[in-house]
Amino acid sequence: MKLKYLFPLFIAILALVTSCTEEESMTLLDEIRVSSSYVAIPEAGGSATITVTAQDSWTIEKVTTEKDDVEWLTFSTTSGSAGESQLTFSAPSAIDGRTAEALLHSGGKTQRINIIQGLAKISEVTAAEVNAGPDGKTFRVTGVCTAIANTLYGNWYLTDETGTVYIYGTLDAKGATRNFLSLGLEVGDEVTIEGPKSSYQGNPQMVDVTVIQINKSLIKVDSVANQELPIEGGEFIAYLTSKGQGVSVDIPEDAKSWLSISSIESAGEEVVVTFNAAANTGGDRGTTLTFRTTDGSKNYSTETTLTQKGAILEVPVSEFLAAEVGNTQYRLTGVITNIANSRYGNLYLRDFSGETYVYGIQDFESKGLKEGDIITIVGKRAAYNGSPQVGSAVLESVIPVTAATIAELLTKPDDANTFYMVSGEITSIANETYGNLYLKDGDSEIYLYGCYPGYGATGDARKFLLADKGIKVGDKLTVIATKGSYNGVNQLSHGFYFSHESAE
Image 1 (cartoon, rainbow, N blue to C red):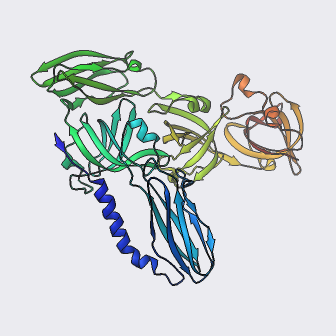
Image 2: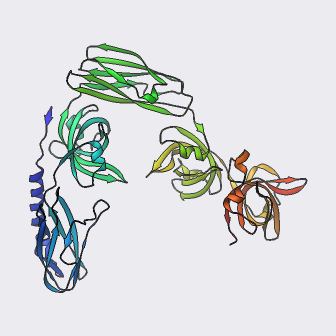
């Protein structure tokens, strides 16, 4: 067991002294000067006053953040005139130390003033309390290292009974970065850390933490065999070292229907656990297995994961949107309605049931795709800031759609496999339910035999597009359809909606 001690009070005071030394050059502005750019307010509450000397009128404002609107800090005034004046900062008592920053503007220059009230206290909390805590606050938390994402900077996951905290950067014993391996921290170890909480794209994390204590686990996974199982199933083997009293295995409830333990064999500290996975008739799946031991007074655990390939699920967009984020592969077919990024292939894909955002298609630039094309992709259900999207998408096939006027379309041969994008004014509606109507563009007119909500619609899903979207005679309608004919009369067949413009 190793102990590493921090001296937060000494560090805070040293930082303050260093900053005050640098302040001499910060306060000597020609346009505006302050007697001190650091203001200390007693923790019990009170005030502190500085002198402002300005060549012109001045104003002061607080620097606020999403996490702190700094309502606790007040100024004796928010503006002043040229010359020398007094500015007082006040705050009520603080349960914990806090800081703020103010900006003093005058003559086109800005002077920063730092306010500190008390010294920030390090709170011993749970993982859940860290995740819910304010950014910038320093916490001490104890948990088990459940996964290591980066062994240079020390990015890893700490888990206790309340949840998991992501650690973005870990300092070594001398406070240096990029030396994580020197700590000897392994998955399964119980560790106590200190560091500030922050957020990245809305996700909580702790940054550049200091390790206070490592309690080495009595059990660890040395290696595994067949960590990615084939669709037909098979054996997964975990090789462990356990210095405790026996080994138990936890299989999550949602995995017990397809994963079971075949055997547990031990020879001294070496333990081999063999699992059997059933054939997978659904999408990709996986689970996390927990191995536990004890020394008689304290429990220890370690984890490993396994995945199993599954069938690709061919679903409409609505079912994809309702699915959980995960590694299951989905096959989606629809129309490109908008290309948000032409380099990476960030686009919107729509079928008869809904629309989803596709976060990039592999090698998109070389595919020659455009808005209106009908494509089939395979990808995972992902999300960004809670919004669903397709991740890791690969293009399987494409049906190109050619833009054409009605006049041009009338010259084309009948072909049920060639799709055109056609626009025109609705001159009459023959069937409201299925969207049978006439389109006119200039002097040319054609009958549209069916306008369905989107690609792939069958049965009742083909009905009521016009009513649902409020489409009526006089509106301009853009559809995707094939060129056909009936009793020798030209028509658009297999049509589905792309967009419309209301005549109003």
